[in-house]
Image (cartoon, rainbow, N blue to C red):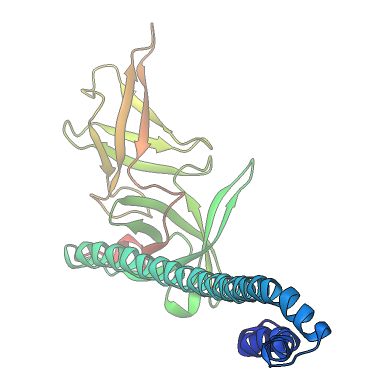
Amino acid sequence: MIDFLARHRGAIAGWSLSLLTLGLVLAGRDGATVLGRSFGLVASPVQDGAQTVTGGFGSLVDRYVFLIGAQREASQLQHEVADLRRELLAAEEVYLENHRLKTLLHFKESTELPLLPARVVGRSASSWFRTLTLDKGADDGILPNSPVVTADGVIGRVYQTSPSASRVLLLTDTSSAVDALVQRSRAQVIVEGRLDPLCRILYLARTDDAVPGDRVVTSGLGDVYPKGLLIGEIVSVEPVKGGVFQRAELKPSADFSRVEEVFVVPAGPGAAP
C-alpha cells in the first residue's frame, strides 16, 4: 500500500483536479452558459485549495515513506550491531584463552616435570567434596594420586579415573593433606583443606619462624607431590596459649573457581628427575 501511494501519488493528485479543470475550461469559453460561468467562479478558488491539499498529501506520503525507510534502516543497523558484539565477544574469548595457554606453556617450559595438559569439563562443590572433572583419563596415562597443577600453583590430586576422564580432589577439600615447607624458613608443616577458601596449616611449632606473606611449597615427602610446587601464602599466624603449635591459615595461590586448563603429572612424583 505504501509503495502504491508512493508510485502513484501524482496520478491521484491529477485525478483529483480533473473535474475542476474541466469546469474551468468551460467557464473560460466565449458564450459560456450561466451554469458554466458559475461553475468557473466556484471552481477557481476550489482549484487553488485542491492544489494545496494534493500538494500537502504528496508531501505527507513522502514523509511517511521516509520514516518507514528510516525504521527499516535502523532495524538493520541494530542487527549489524548485535552481530558485531557477538564477534567482539568471540574475539575476546580467543584472546583470553591464548593468554592462559601462553602462561601454561611458559610454566611447562620452566620445569622438567612431565606435564599433561587437560581441560576442566566439570565442577562439584557440595557440602562434603570439592572436585573438578578433567577431559583426560587412564588412556592418557593419568593415575590415581597424580598431582594436578597450574602456573599459579597446586590444584589438588586425581582420586578417580576412567578411560577418558578423571576427577580431581581440590586442595581445599577436607580429605586433602599436603606435606609442605615454609619456603623462607624451611619449617615443615601440613596444609589441610577445610571446605573453605582458606586452608589450615598444621604442626607449625611455636619455635618455627613463619609470618603472614610467607610462601608455602610442597616438600616432596609422601607419595603424591613433587618438591617445590607453590601451594599458597600464609595469611595469619597466631600463638596458642599453652600450646605446642601455632595456629595458621593459608590462602591457595590458585583460584579454583576460575581454573579452566590444568597440567597433570601423569606418573606422580616418581617421574620427576
